[in-house]
Image 1 (cartoon, helix red, strand yellow):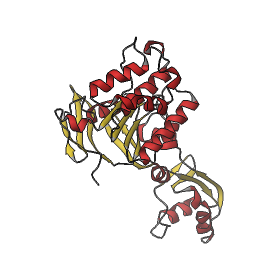
Image 2 (cartoon, rainbow, N blue to C red; image 1 turned 30 degrees about the horizontal axis):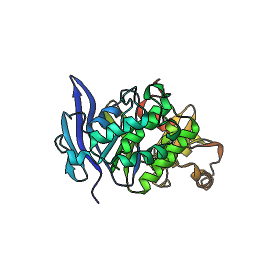
Image 3 (spheres, rainbow, N blue to C red; image 1 turned 60 degrees about the vertical axis):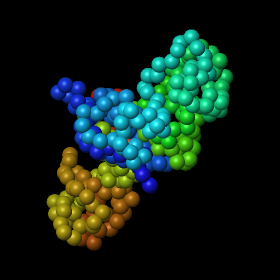
Length: 309
């Protein structure tokens, strides 16, 4: 199966600044992948290059096995882009805006009412765009991205401004689209969106990809156990030795505790292993990582742009 998206050493420079720096990743049909990063990390630039709106400085992009070129209109018609800020005609209704876009794209306008219903905009489709709330504008932009039934969806903050009901509706729609074989790359600063619907995440920071993998695997790899024992010095030697259990990763000493890279469910086995050597836990605290803490760890920032702990 060809990748829906495959990029190699993808780079975009603006003067001396690298907005995207040698990115490598692939996205396959049926995958719903979260693209995360602090403000200014390169997420929007990445989506712009994948959609053909921004010319890369270097590197390659292949869509469905073919090199992406600006003149390849047939290939780009398989891509649906939802930008962070969409431009529509303010005095036209939501429905009429979609009719204009359908004519521009050369797609069948008879699909419009179905798309309006899918995204939950039926009651407001007749209203002028200038009267729309932020949430309604997002829904119209999502319907616009779905025009022509594209195989690849590039979504920038799709649930921004939506109430919880609207967010859940969009989540369900995206799951349905992925189940139908659509490849979806979702950029969002709302980590709960990504945790709820994405099995895989790509985290970008200062233009470089700093994490890419299944969310469960990334969280498991960064989980920790905090430990104090009846003999910390001997425990450290034992747990650092060649005979230590294979599920223990890096070991450090922080604030008077041993910090082990290990899954929380290994806490019982850890206690038993130490007991066999006459060492007993005084304090044993499993810490399961969250996406928020993983994000802060690999980027050095919280999701609101402040330095991480």
